[in-house]
Length: 259
Image 1 (cartoon, helix red, strand yellow):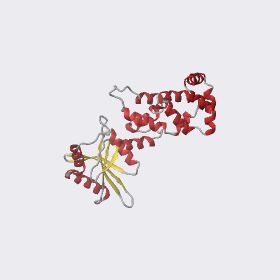
Image 2: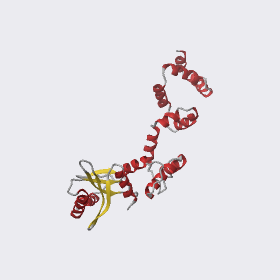
Image 3: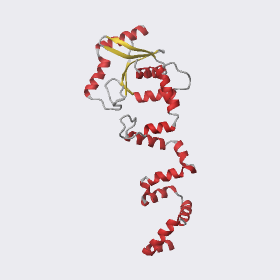
Image 4: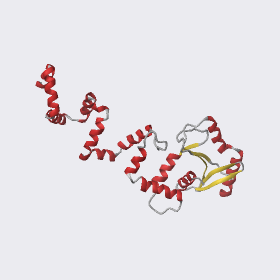
């Protein structure tokens, strides 16, 4: 069984499904039949389509036709119905589910992103000793690799020429944007020891432009704190020197300061 199939099986098991994998359908193999027995059984025919070489790729029309055959081939339909009947003692309606890394829409088929399945599985992992090698590997990634900030940083910040980089430039920007919006980031920036980091960020941002910085400060400072800010700013050596030079050149500034 492939690692991704192990992961999807675990995901389904945790939702209360009993799963049967790799069912022979003559010229094909049915990936998973999932059955959840309650007063009214829920049955799913689940197929997988995952890739690490081109995750999130848009599927071509030819690939769509191939994916549809995974569900609608007559041998597949017969094998699915036969398996369901053997476990439920009779026929039952079932849902068709495709778990994929790609971007695709198929008629009559529910598409689930494998990325979301993987996220849910990893999020639910605790520190118990798992026997499954796949589950244990995910556990090590979660509690050993992801627990090391330097290791995570080195992975996501790989050089743009590295063919093994996990994130594109766009994905990296999205990650940083999401992290900066979290409460932990806001608490970090609220600490005094983070001031130099914030200054460094400002120096590299559009806020280094005086007009943008002034507009930003207007939305941050109250009337009271703005007065305090100006008093402190005017005491700065570099600022005083700049003002003195401007006063000698611009009488409008003199009138502004006198006002």
